[in-house]
Image 1: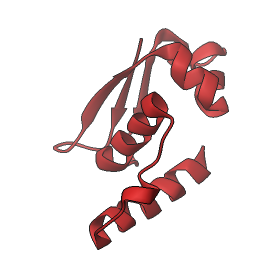
Image 2: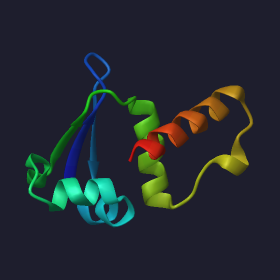
Image 3: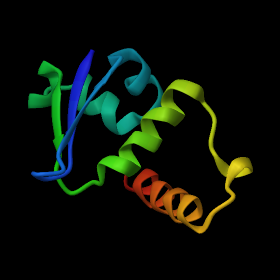
Image 4: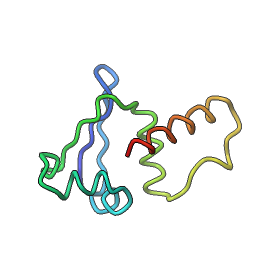
Length: 90
């Protein structure tokens, strides 16, 4: 398991994710957690990311699904838009 801390206080949130899952699906996390970086110890800080967007990313990791077909509100659409930009970074 790895611990990823997302956001800044007071909205900072901890996510505990299976290391193999996140490393197999996203090369950025594979390099960070499996390489010679300090994150190799199983902890990462992403202070510039939004916890709500990262939660959507984690949902996708575990379900291998997106909410695209189930978007019914503007808020959901904006969330997916933010998720897209998050994914483009990594």
